[in-house]
Image 1 (tube, rainbow, N blue to C red):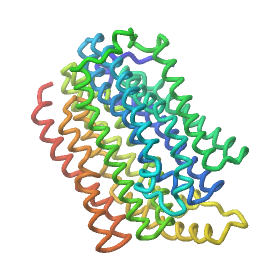
Image 2 (image 1 turned 60 degrees about the vertical axis):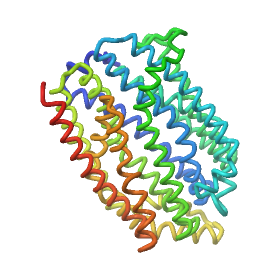
Image 3 (image 1 turned 90 degrees about the horizontal axis):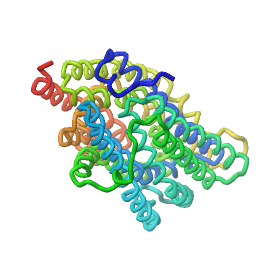
Length: 460
């Protein structure tokens, strides 16, 4: 495996760098997304469609706590990338130590709070009726593993900031493969039902953490910690927090969206319509993996070159990333537009002897999912500009515009739309809110990014 040093982020061809950074990131995200996708297929076929809806209810809570680790990771990694670009390795190491301490303190506390309020949080996120009991089983077990997930998410971004995307890719693949193997063992062989699905997920988190720990203890990492680095430094914590809040706000907004969507859809069509959204939610995580991979690959390149004041390379990185991401997003759009019914069928069991209630839910889901999926992904070809534009401000350490642009799609546009349109036109109002929000957020981001480039990147 050829090793990429952090210095090469400032010297190699941008196209080659972006590919070398993005392909491993895309593969890692693909495997992780396939894990979520196949996990849902296993659950839907081996347990039932209500179980898919139950997992969909739990995800926003568990992912929010796990995203605390990602927020600390991305916030700190922006500092690390710029510190390495400026040849300040001492600051990079101190930042990493602070990331570890923050992640442990925050996520363990949040996991304990989440467990204490289990019976309140699950119904609030749409876990009502037949969904509540399986959701509670899954939620309780998965929350035990959330601190491990948070450490993995934090560590993964730091590995990428060091210019080691292949190691980051492996770190993402391990929990996915482990989860799927445990799914087969715990659900299919041992017949543990929802508890089996939850323990499989938690086992995957622990396996990932073990690999990330190995990476940083080995000679593969440039960041060699000492106990003193773990002590919190207020200026560093403040900078990590100001940049990490962008990621945290995005995930908090996503959790609010899940809360609203599950409750709105439950009121419109009961558990079956929540199951429709659960399938579409899995595709939102899975289908855009190459675009998210390019965004992940873009961050350390832009951050390093900005820190080194190589503004011509920064501009080239922005343009190249948007171009590649737009092409891939368009291909994703075509696939989802042509085959939505076939995708929906993958998630549903066709076993003989299904209870009539389950058959009715399956029929409803098959009827409603294809049209909904086409609407949800209608504006996919243009989202590259929005994602890369928002990521740029995070990469260069400008927290406020990064926060505002990151929140624009879901917070400023999508949430108001789903609160208004379903009251006017019912279920269709939910689905058309997605492309409208995408278009509005892309226009805003494009305008702001163009203005910023003219202001700060006009000198080479």
